[in-house]
Image 1 (spheres, helix red, strand yellow):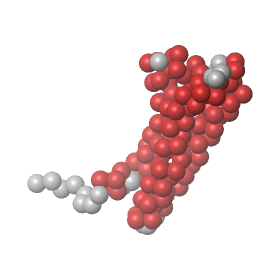
Image 2 (image 1 turned 120 degrees about the vertical axis):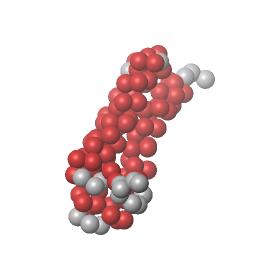
Image 3 (image 1 turned 90 degrees about the horizontal axis):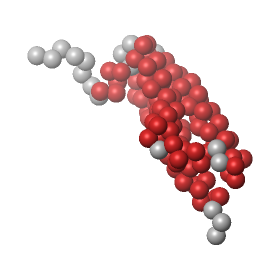
Length: 124
């Protein structure tokens, strides 16, 4: 018989303070890990962040991704402390909102940023 905790799996992550900390770390590292992965797999695509004709927009884009990653870490840590204080539903909803409004757009900026920069730098 399984004697684990009952309830949604997302809540079992926050059963300990270390679980909430690791959830915040993973959420913040996703866009950066995606950038590193794409740099290894397709360096020509990622190099558009640094090309001469769109560098003025590519580097601030990367800076914004880093800012969003740091902000997501801080907010997810706060969500885990809210869950730890006993307000599980409120903390889980806030963590979901942070993932949807901060982490997901940061990952999209890494994935689609070079494509947008290619279009901005193209001569029609």
